[in-house]
Image (cartoon, rainbow, N blue to C red; front, top):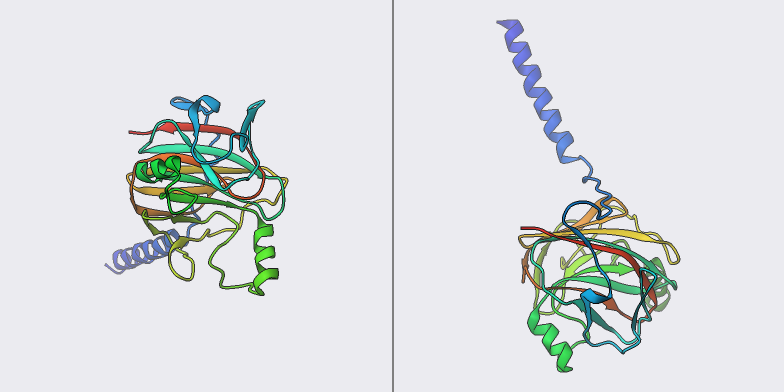
Length: 244
């Protein structure tokens, strides 16, 4: 009886330690390259300029170049619901700002096309692409170095009329999902984003590790967009897989 009791106690202790370890376990790694069944390479034929200049976006040798001027987006021709997306990107200047919009609403895209939206960017979920130099420039301009409303390692947040419940940790006002790790590389270096959107939940992996995301997105269907916002950036190896 004593032996059985001891074994039972040991099992309970082991389960407790296992549960604690599971709670503290790192987020899963997933360096998805976008190859395999169902994946499609994205190119010029898949995108439509929404509210940028005719020369803002260009396609050459498998690359997508963006001048950053003016602020705006180009969208995929067809909306998506559940998906996986691979994007490689490189800021060409320190302090660059860009992003991938997920589930941008049809209403906001139409308003941007028509030139009567209140802003230059759509309503949706933004997966931000921000260079570390942006933080340095912000510190020089404002004197603030901590408790900032943004990071430069892959914030995920809603814009305009869209809504999202961000995963922790979050920004000071709770509107952004802040990355759990600082994995982004600086200007002049290639970064790898893997974005997965399923049933209103968005998750972001930066250079192979999951870092941020959110749930209960509204809308949970819409356009994928690439963002131009003031600084040149390059994209390559965009690949998409639609999910049921």
